[in-house]
Length: 281
Image (cartoon, rainbow, N blue to C red; front, side, top):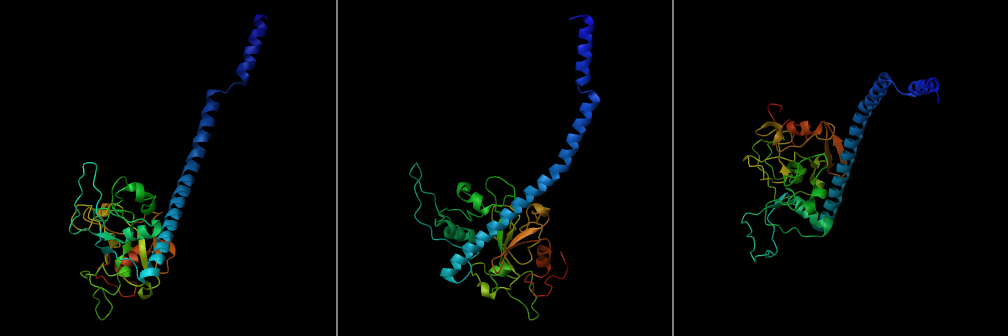
């Protein structure tokens, strides 16, 4: 091949190649498409987690119905378990059981769902996700975040769960200093139809002492939107982690997402139309 033919072939090859400007244009278009699609994919992922959470709440409702079939009430929000004899460890030692050991509704529902006794000598083991191989997938919301042992993703709302154990004045107003009895659960027939039973909760909450591991498994009157001692991080409250809203299981055992109910409960604890706080939170 002559020099002239070689030069002509080289020019044809160069003519078919991308220029730097063309490459930059293509990269810019791809980047633009990714920037448009990623938020949509993120929203779809968040929506899928919210739907999964609602399905989990419905499973709780099925377990509650099974429990009610035997006892005609909700499970207690707080109770003292009668543990089976503890199994010795590899050294033959048996871990002592605390004298004031407390369990909650999650331990009972786990038994009714999986037909498996919870036998752990620690307070609220399921709610705090101790022994995560057994409980993490069931009692943890996929949107809650957090790893390892933490206080759980769902809590019962005590003004519904233990209705009738609060002191209410003649006008129907609840006191912020009201002391309910979490050991006495209510019958669903005595709960207002639009009252929540269980809701998304702040997974890293505390209950007053700042330790963070003293979880009691419930949200009391006046706590629906309580921020806690260091702001939102540790408040024992309902959590708006699903697109600015919260998933709830209601008195009739249906699940629903709401952006307003948390604020409503912070003012009117039992949704009877009487504002229970002098200053709105």
